[in-house]
Length: 592
Image (cartoon, rainbow, N blue to C red; front, side, top):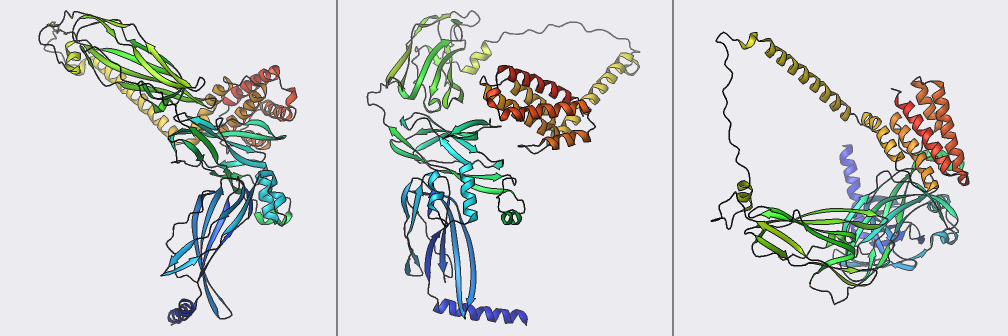
């Protein structure tokens, strides 16, 4: 009965909504003054629509969608009038400063067109945002303050490149507040670029940097290696980072602190877009140019200078240097007609160093000379476009000779057109079986009575048990991530201690991070900022000797003191601190 009553009431409410409602669409934003690092929430509200219209929203070239749409619907009944509200919420990033406009849309719904309102937005520099929002409430003020203390920047050394030249974009976090976690956006495609690699930096190094007179802790989060595929002014779009802040960074407002319930804050910070001007290559490229841009060295050689006929040999061609190593092939060398040449096997060792792509590519050709003789390989040529001299440079390797001797192990006739597998089989030596008399045993001999056999069985059983226990132990250890973390802590710490920076300030920061990470791993504490009181309490529970606790506290406080007096840091302090950390780690390793 009650259900039917509710159903009838609902129908009565919807009927006037459908028959007499005046539909309209309104577009609004959460802020009209913003900067390149702050996202904008765009709300598209459909009033008295029975459903969401099917429409592809394009906010224009000055904006990029980084989130959404999220949907919501609700009904209201005020003064006998029923209203339906449906909302689409997009999160967008701006690409440039100035006066921008979110355009109006003409949306068709059930045979009728509805035009939305345009929205004007002012995009200013980061430092000017707050002064342009005089009526902002406390939450907006707080977000603005966080924005000044934390941001992400995309760093690219070259704003103008040649078509085919590799571009390394580094995304760097700047912060004056404590960060608990952050996300790394997955970048699948960028118009006009081929994404070679998105290399996430594990355990990023924290470095203090001075930006316009303000000191920030900075960390490089990941490198993006791009290769432009078209000329003109290309845009690397803005990227959104979700960053979780420690609950210790709270507002001074007591009411805000009360209602926040000490929860960690999650904010969005945008790394602004980057414009790259891509120039075309000169038209006078030689035939040996296959797209290499940068600075390279060429080497070519046989694996050995002499070989027998119908015996396989390797011919190695290597290109080493810096540039777009992933985006070119090697021009096919010309070999004598008496050579069987197989498709080359390519190996590459490519890495990022000082924001440049460096490495080596090697092509290995397997060659089988069919007849004896002295052969001269035509010059090996490789052409690349040199970025410094701004011209094509052709490298050449000449005087490559191979002496092919008569193969005494093979019959000369009928050896043409052998396959590679056949040649490998023919080149194997024939191994004859050597037959020897076996030892004779008595007819009364019994295997079960022979003590030697029992000894062998017993030893084998012991080995199998030991091996099984060993495998079981490591299986249990590897299934326990906390145990793996504790076991790896010492290795990671000593490796990082052996690779300290030559810069004293950076070396001090690295030593502080190494000790912090080691103790976090050993005590299974959350990565990031840990407190001395927490460490002492944990080791007291393990009943550690007082002298070790005193030493932990002394080293920790020494690091904290030096942090605020960087002018005191020198090589002697660094070496002394390194030795103290090593001695402390060795003592802590003995604690179970």
